[in-house]
Length: 243
Image (cartoon, rainbow, N blue to C red; front, side, top):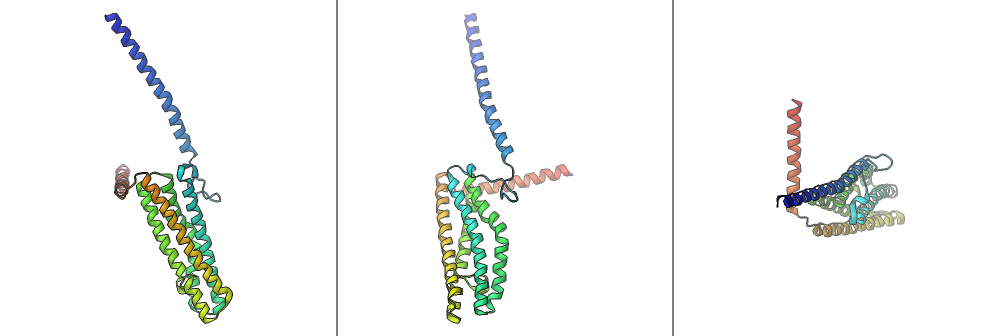
């Protein structure tokens, strides 16, 4: 009996060792892949001067949505440039002093938006697409709410506030009637309005994935609190170590 038990115990030990070896064999390639992915995550965007790691493949089935966000970002850049050009055309056509201050505001928007817009909207959008994280979704929603309100404001287009849109078109129509400047302002109003619609579509698609992944406002709140708690703990530890 003892001999039989010994055989079974040896057999069980061999099976356990085999399972451990198999699990180690399975884990090691996975760990190697993770290490390779970390190594590959070098700064690669924008191509002209890389400052962040960016990959559409990291977004999985939300790749299309990340691409839509990038289109929205470049559309914003073009809109701000044409918006400033429209105010310059309005000033040349009408000689109205209201356009002078507006041109300065529009020029500042066009100058700083490529950087501010990238981090304040697109990067938050990309984060929601590349991670299954409730907090990232909420931040993306907030950024698009701000973007939609901004686009609505620009579609209204008060020249003194830096907008080339509906109000600008009506001013030019009633005061000088210059066809080109009026049509340009109406086109800009329509372009800003289309940008509003496009952003609303993006928000709807984001919300669909938000629900599919089981995300919630409650989870987002918990994740944000946990993030700041970790940061506070990290700062406290680094302060103690530094002292």
